[in-house]
Length: 112
Image 1 (cartoon, rainbow, N blue to C red):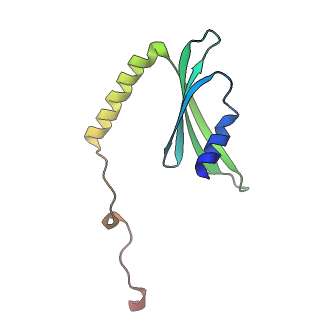
Image 2: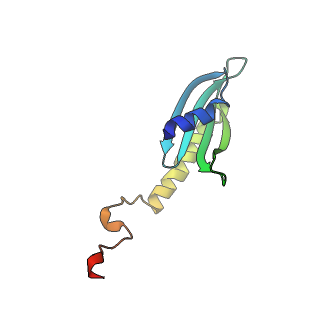
Image 3: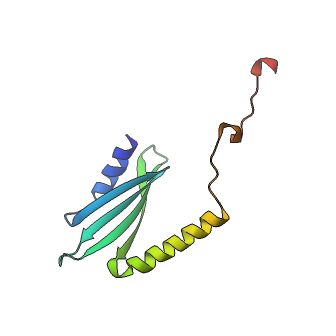
């Protein structure tokens, strides 16, 4: 249900120049990595972040942010991305959540 909503929301932006597409669901967001071709058959990448949210009237809308990445920038972009990801991982490692880490206590309501 959820993935279909994201895929359908992105379809109106996609056109005949798509070469390859990889959607990645990550929590409340979906990232679309789309390889596109120019009229001269040169490839470039678009990265779209899509997040579903509900309007006050109950309708669902998608907030989207898109960047275009051209092949002459791939190396510098991937180096910079790897550097900042490693920086974050080194300074703020991922902590696995366990049941013990939940903010709720084990309350017996009969005792209250």
